[in-house]
Length: 146
Ligand SMILES: [Zn+2]
Image 1: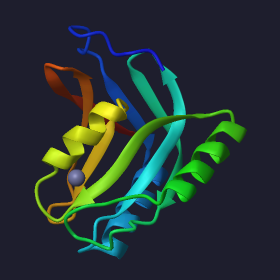
Image 2 (image 1 turned 90 degrees about the vertical axis):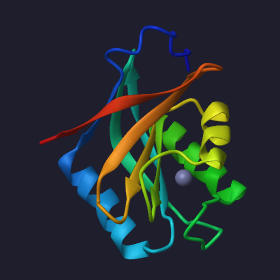
Image 3 (image 1 turned 30 degrees about the vertical axis):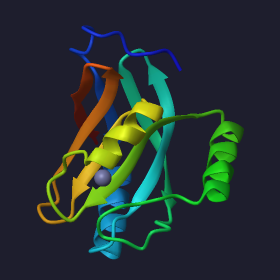
Image 4 (image 1 turned 180 degrees about the vertical axis):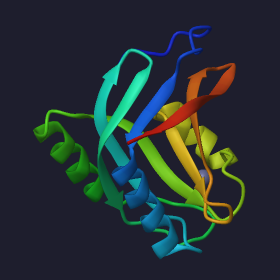
């Protein structure tokens, strides 16, 4: 996956259709107060990340402050995405607080420089961020399409 060019983040956006967005919200509400997570698969077109498939993942931590995905299950999810001829275009997880990346999130965002959608199970609001370079992360636009 090509890197995001620093300074060229103006039009960074992630697009998700309404049905998939509702699916994510239902996942978040069902599991709360535990953190839930999902892999977002789809296509990338330059700075546009288009989500076409949601793969809900189990939070191995059974925690309301962090999430970990079992490596074997993650591997299976990636294989499935590959077999569908899609790419990983995002990672979704929830917080029982503000939808702002935690210190741990920041560490993993650097290793996985795809859009990270964080949903607050308190307000129901989601925000999306991506790791750009050592200067930090950028918030990107999350567009829900009909
Ligand atoms: Zn987090």
